[in-house]
Amino acid sequence: MKFKSLMKLAKGHLWGYIILIILTIFHRFSYSYVPLFTQYIIRTLTLRLSTDPLPPDLQTVNLPAFVVNFFESGETILMIVFYVAITLIFYQAFRYLMMYFELSLRGRIQESIAKKLRNRLYDHIQNLSYKYHNNADSGDLIQRVTSDVETTTGFVVLQFMQLIGLFASLFSGVFQMYHINTTIMWVCLAVIPVYAISSIFYFTRIEKIFEKVEHDESEMMTVIQENVSASKVVKAFANEPFELEKMEKKNKQYTNSNIRANKVVAIYWGSMDFISMAQYALVTVLAIHFVRTGEMDGASFAASLMLIGLLVWPIRGLGRLINEFTKAFVAIGRINHIFEEKTEYEQDGHLEPEIHGHIVFNKVSFKFEDDANYLLKDISFEIKPGETVAIIGKTGSGKTTVINLLMRMYEYEGSITIDGVELREIKKQHMRKSIGAVLQDPFLYSRTVYENISITNKTASKDKIITAAQTAALQNDIHTFKNGYETMVGEKGTTLSGGQKQRVAIARVLVSDKPILIFDDALSAVDNKTDMMIRGALNQKEHQSTNIIITHRITTAKEAHKIIVINNGQIEDIGTHKELAHKDGLYNKLWGIQGKLEQEFLDLIEEGA
Image (cartoon, rainbow, N blue to C red; front, side, top):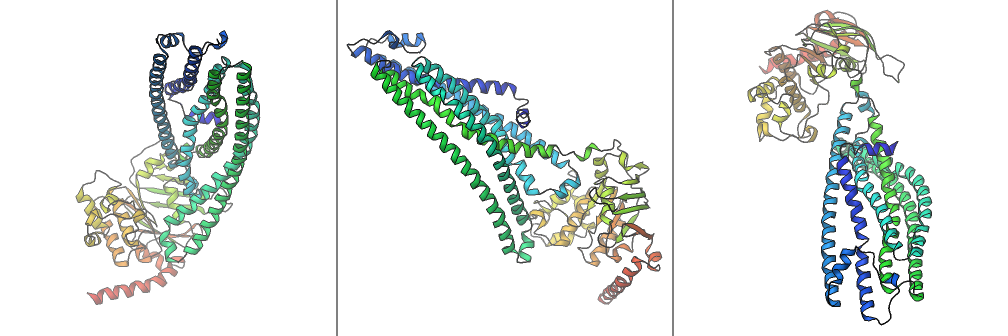
C-alpha cells in the first residue's frame, strides 16, 4: 500500500520516467563494454607479439563487428592502440553526455514532484479543522512538509532509478561475463540468494527502527520550534535551564535512536562487505586458476576483474537502497497520515448570500467530541445589523466558543442564522470572508507596519490605510517610529508592544470593511483612554458594521447597544448597561468592582483638563 502511494507521486511524469529508465539502462549497459576495450588491446598485443597461437575461442572479443573492423584497419600495433584510445574517448564522452541528461532530467522530475507534493500537503493542512490544529505539533508538521517530502521524492526518483540501474548493471555484467567464462558468472550469481534473504530480514528490522527515529526527531523539532517561538517568555521567566534540560532529553532520545539504527546498519553493511570481498577474492583466485590451465588468457583475466564490479558492487549497494526505501516508507506513512485526515470542508454549505450582520442564535448548544459535558447550553440571542454587542462572562464560560461557532470553527446543535440563512448552509470561506476578527493574541507578519495593515485588502489606498490607523488610535505611535509606516515588524510582532500589536490588528480589520467585526478581548491590551477612542471611532465609521466585543472590562461593555452575560455556558441575562447594573447577577457584581475604578479614572481626566 505504501509502495503504491510512493508510485502515485510520479503521476504526470510518465514520459520523463520512461526516458529516465532508458538512459539509466543505457548508462549501465554501455559501461559493461568499457572493460572489453582493455581486453581487446591486451589480446591484440598477445596475438601480434606471441609466437604461440591462442585457441579460437580466445581470439575474439564481444565488441560489435564494425568496431573491431575499425580497430583492425590499423596497419601497426601503435595505430591499433591509437584507434582504440580515440574510440574509447569518444565513447566515454558520449556516455557522460547521456549521463548529464539523465542526472539533469532526474533532478527536474524530483523537484517537480517535491514542489507538487509540498503544495498539496500544505494546502491540505490549511484546510484541516480548527480542532486538528489545536492538537497538532507545529514542529512535527514542519518536518513532514520539509524533510519527509524530500525523503519521499528522493526515493521515488533517485533511489528508484538506482534500483533500475542495479538490475541493469547485474544483467549487463552477466551478459559480458557469459562471453568470457561461464563458471565465474555462476559463482557471481550464486551469492544473490544470500543477499536477497538477508535484505528481506534487514528491511523488516530496520523499518520499525526508522519509525522510532522519525518520531523522536519530530518531538525534538517541536521542542526547538516552541522554544524559538516563545523565546521572550523563556527569557522573561529565566527559564533557560528548564528549556535546555527539555531539549537535552529529546536530543538524547533522538541520538540514541540514531545510534541504534546505525548499529543495525553497520552489522548489515559489514556482513555484506565481507561477503562481497570474499566473492571478489574467490573470483580472482578462480580467474588465476583458469589462466594457468589455459581456459582464460591475460586479456580475459583483466576484463573479468573489471566486470566483477558490475556483479558485486550493485548488490553491495542494495543495503543503502533498502535504507532509503525504508525511510521513504516511514516518510510516506507520515505524509499519508495527514492526507487521511478529513478537511473541514467535507461538511460545508453551498450558499453565498450577501451578509449584512443580522445574527440570531436559537437554542444553540456545543460540546467537544471527547467531553460529555456541554460547554454551551441552549444559547439564544439576536444581534441586529449595525449593533455593537458586548459579551461578558467569567473565564471559561464559553464566550470565545460563541465566536468560534459563528466563524464555523466547530459544528453546533440548534440553529444559527445570518440574515435569515442557516449558518450550516453558508460556505465556510464565504462566512469567514465576511468577518473581521481581532483575537486575544494577534499574529503579525515579519513585514512593514503598512503591509501588516493592508494585508486584508491589497487594493486599499494609502488614505484608507491611514484612516484605519487613525481609527485604531495607532497614528501617533507610527509617527514615533523612525521609518513610519515602513518600519519593519519583527516576527509575530515582537518589536511592538502588546497594545501596538492589538491596534495594528484592529486597523487591519478595519481596512477590510467587513460587515461583521469581532473583538475577542482585543481591547484589553490598551488603556482606558485609547479604548474609548477606538470605540468612538468605530461608531463614527462611514460603513457601520455589526460589532461583537468580548471583554472583561465593564467600561468597554457599557457603551454597547446590548450586553450578553454568559455564566457557566448559559445566558444569564441580556440588556443595556443601565438595565443590568441594577439587577442582581454577575454583571452587577463586576460593575460594583469596576465602576468605582471608572469613576476615579473620569475624575482624573477632569482634573487633568
